[in-house]
Length: 196
Image 1: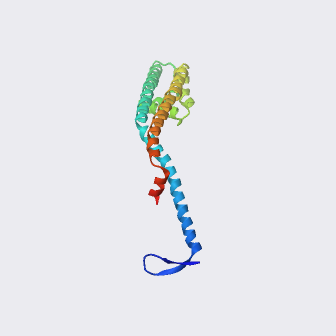
Image 2: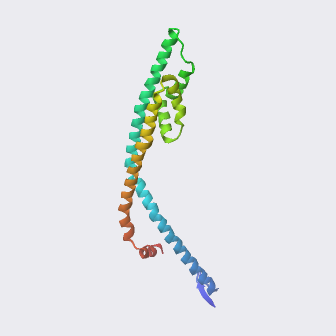
Image 3: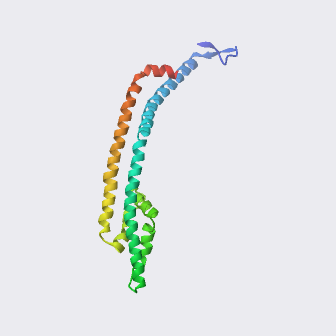
């Protein structure tokens, strides 16, 4: 029931119970099974990495398109705010009444083109509630600004983002199908031989 085992190449051997040797073999088998499971995850990981790399070009195009839309709408709202502030200054100069909190609220959200674009980007990506940004436009410029702002939200959130999602899915699907042939070229037995 004992077997002599040479440990560490030192030339000395000592008897080890066979059950311990069987346990070592089982542990080695468990290690191989873990490697096989890891290979399964590695194929999925490889697919994910290939999909991400393949979607970089559409990602850059999407960012450019989104920034272009945000810039155009930001120019429009910033110009409206500037016109309101100039009208307010003229009204104060002529002695007419101007809403005092209007310029502060509008300046907070639409004071410069950069600020306006940042807030518009935040409304589309969920970083800020768009009703907070819309309220000064409705209160001080025109109630019709609600329609313009809603059109911006609907266009970017529903149309632009859904089209972008479709492009990403198509790109990832194409990358995944391209990688499938390479994954099946190597049978599982070959992968096990390499893992040993």
